[in-house]
Image 1 (cartoon, rainbow, N blue to C red):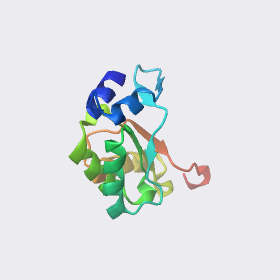
Image 2 (cartoon, helix red, strand yellow):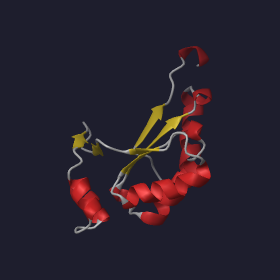
Image 3 (cartoon, rainbow, N blue to C red):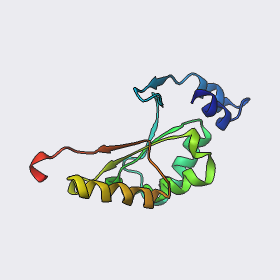
Amino acid sequence: MQQSLQAAAGADSHAARALASVPLIQLADGNAIPQVGFGVWQVPNEQAIAAVRQALASGYRLIDTAQGYDNEGGVGLAIRDNVDRASLFVTSKLRTKSLGYDAALRGYEDSLEKLGLDHLDMFLIHWPAPKLV
């Protein structure tokens, strides 16, 4: 993954040099996740486009959003317009009201649709609330 991340940023760019110094965490399934990412909490959807575009141009390759941030559309647009999806690690999180097996599956599909992506690298329960399930 490190090589594809560097290639995505451009071999001679400042972003590529900075990216090369971002350590990756190896996951049990063989994938890796950058230790530093760009999160968009409290970034309005219409501002998320420019913010994520700038983050990607700066070398960030982990993008973190959530259903509850209401900006997955803008995040997805910035991702689709700027870089090869294979060079990114994209995370989103499930809304609390969508807890439960069937609701979580629908929530995942909703995130994919809003982001305009075919998969997420990580999808988390944003706020555990066992009494709501």
